[in-house]
Length: 122
Image 1 (tube, rainbow, N blue to C red):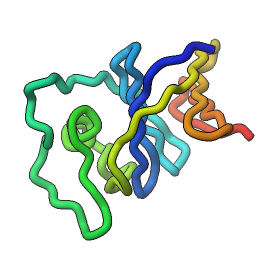
Image 2 (tube, rainbow, N blue to C red; image 1 turned 90 degrees about the horizontal axis):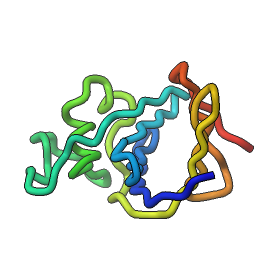
Image 3 (cartoon, rainbow, N blue to C red; image 1 turned 60 degrees about the horizontal axis):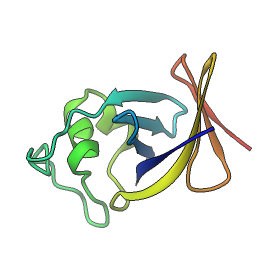
């Protein structure tokens, strides 16, 4: 497995992970679908990428997560509003023939299939 610095943000219906070594954002929905999207946000761009206002008790993602959330069709609907601000952790990744595996904040592993579906283990 390979280790890298990762930003994590939890949402109403999923999670986003930013992988530093590849500048990629993983959007993992609670419906067991996932997407991998290039991080096109750059320092100097606005922190907020859209005018949406979060409901009470929730937040709107900013920077790279916010750029994807605001500008990539279907992402807002997939994960909903963020439940907390993003935070950084060290994660482990492993590519395999059919996809990728990510071990994030706990002992569970996300198994991300090239088909666009995911499951966790255990």
